[in-house]
Amino acid sequence: SVALLIMFTTASCVNVIKDHPRSQYVCEVEKIKKYVFFKYRYGTSGFRGHHETLDSVIVRVGLLAALRSLSQNGQAVGIMVTASHNDEIDNGVKIIDPSGEMLDHSWEQLATDIANKPEDEVLALIQSKYQALNLDDNECKNASDQHCSATVFIGRDTRPHSLRFAQMIAQAVSSVNATALVRDFGEVSTPQLHYIVQRANMSLSTQTITADIYLSEVLSAFKQLMRLLSQSISASPTENLAAATSTSKLLGSLMIDCANGVGGLPFKELQQELSDLLDLNLIHLPSPKFKVNEQCGAEHVHKQRRLPLGLQGKEAMIKGQRLASLDGDCDRLMYYYLDDNDVLQILDGDKQICLLYEFMKPYIEQCGVKLSISVVQTGYANGASLDYIEQKLGLKSVITATGVKHLHLEAKKYDIAIYFEANGHGTVLIAADAVKRLQNALDNADKNKLSKAQKTAIEILLQLHLVSNQAIGDALADVLLIEAALYGLKWNLAKWSAIYQDRPSSLTKLKVKDRTVFETANAEQT
Image (cartoon, rainbow, N blue to C red; front, side):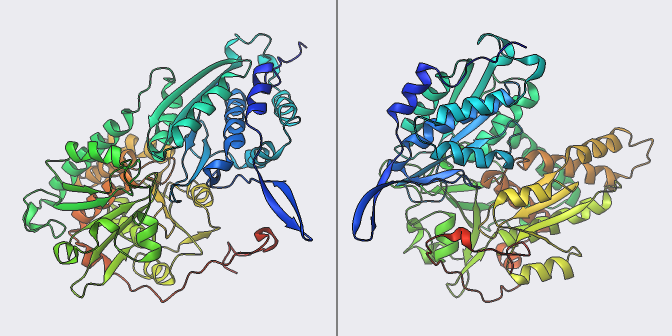
């Protein structure tokens, strides 16, 4: 057997690690001050922290992504530079697997180990993991061999330090002794990069795929979905309660707070593309003058229960209007409105689940294809939502541990599943096998003697699959799903909000020395 190629202990890799040492902070122990290395842990959000402490982590994640790609026969792996809903002073980095989903859970501990290893040990660790991959007949004998290639896609949010981090990642990946394809897609939302990675690997187009595939495919499916809904419910715009009285557009008007973040970029395109359907007004668009998430965004509205800064003082003007907020990387969504008593009514992830399942349920029942269905939530879900889903919609929610990776893994067990955290992070999953069975039933409609209603139900479900992000929570796709649901149900936000009253609850944060010593059970409910 030919020895495996030295991939990660080259002079170039050594220089990358040497030039970006781990960050330290001053710690006082028994009145003695000493320098201590930061400890990093890879979780659902990847690595995250103050941007000045992340240099070493950034380059090491670049090397890890190259290793992950090599382990997957050179398929594209994504790296997203973002700290999502955190303050602008923070940043972070997370890896996207070739499936378009989050990094495989079995690799999280390796990521943590690589981030914390001493400079003189980390490359030997990565090289040993590469050798342990056991590539069998595909052993790399020369760096130019096809099976010795690594493909890494990079995306970033609009924070001022994200460009530098993206450049550092590219440098790290290029230092590996392999044929490396590094593609920087620039400023894209987190869900957009997940989508690009997934589509590139599905269609074997890693070298040619462009970022605009995301919006072009999602919007095409949404427009077809709206055509189907318009035909099936035979409703004129004036009959639709979701439409504002001052407009003749089918979906009325919607104002979206873009959190001064990267989500504003695709939403500006969406604003133009859907101008015939929706009067879309955008505030808190990305600008060097304003900080990401500062006094705006989904986290601000949900946790502070306050309007974004750009709407404060304009309460009389916006009363009763349909409003929504994204977070800094566009993977969370909050809907809300000011009621007649000037009370801010928030439609969080729990209510988004209820709306979407209420909308989809008749089509699932009418389609004539046997499908397993689930709704997935966390222990943070308000108890009133659990009761509504069980008593009104006839489905018992599955509860998982906190963290979108847990919800996503559970949701994948079913043909159709809707999952959301209360914070507005979620999506609708329709399994590939379910799509195949639905398409097969439609292709054989005459043979199966499908009614017009059954065919329409299948067509709507297939378009919902194409609109919803199958890899991750996606605020843009979720806006489209919610707008379609409101139109299909003929609901306005007041009717949606009134489906149940949240039970009183309080959410507080307590800082402890080591949170890992606390153990929970029953999916963190006890």
